Length: 375
Image 1 (cartoon, rainbow, N blue to C red):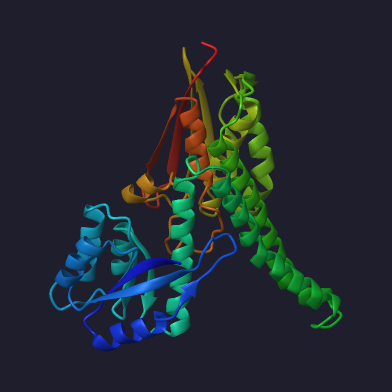
Image 2 (image 1 turned 90 degrees about the horizontal axis):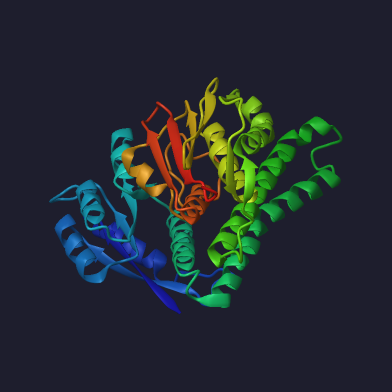
């Protein structure tokens, strides 16, 4: 059985004791894990004491109060960030504010748990964090650990599909039994929720399969002359119905063919991810512009949106596996956290570059430069 260390930094002895009792016999178990994970709870009553334990014990999870007797919790968070420790930090405070939330999120806080919290709330948060840590570690060792890890990785797919499938099954049974009467309108909300669940499952399946294919290594790339403009237009046509729902306009600002030697399937994955993200994270009434530029030995692709943008810290993290930027404006946006990681891996395969230019509330521009293997 694996053991994760949880450090709780809070000046209230009652909070520390209560959290220890809640997690004392708590275990996390998923079908794709070889063993259960339990927890060793460490305690600190001050920020300085917490930093000392962090340096010595390197806990996986940090439950951090902001109002401490010596230094503020956000200062401890800044220390963790400065040391580049791989620790998931959750702020637990009754003094939370929008300003604190923005600062803590910018400095790497994973989540907030307001006081007073229930045992169910703390356990649910720890369970979610444990899964994220496990999945992250799994993907980091995907190439080096052989078939067993690949099998476990595919097991993640079946596990993550179980919850939405159970929900859809429940909705269908309720409709079949006419639990809300004979009127079709009474079931509109169930139908909408089922459609959202299906969309989420489809995204997860495609992203996991793309990532598995890339990580495992393809025998050969099917390099051929492709017109990137046609691939972009196909991606726009595919995403346009969703863009119409979001009231977002899509523009391809090129009329001439842009020919490059590449694998058309890989270019399609890149464009589908970039354009769909540009719509997903846009504002009502916004727009997305795609520009293609053929240079002597490279092709430059840029996708710009007028959306919610992101901070400098977020720009660093977005290309990592299973990373989704958590803000007030993104909490209801679904996604696997794999799309941009897959894009980066494909770009790396071509020895190209990808960069993002973005400011909060001012939109984002993703710029890809791909060498042309045919040159």
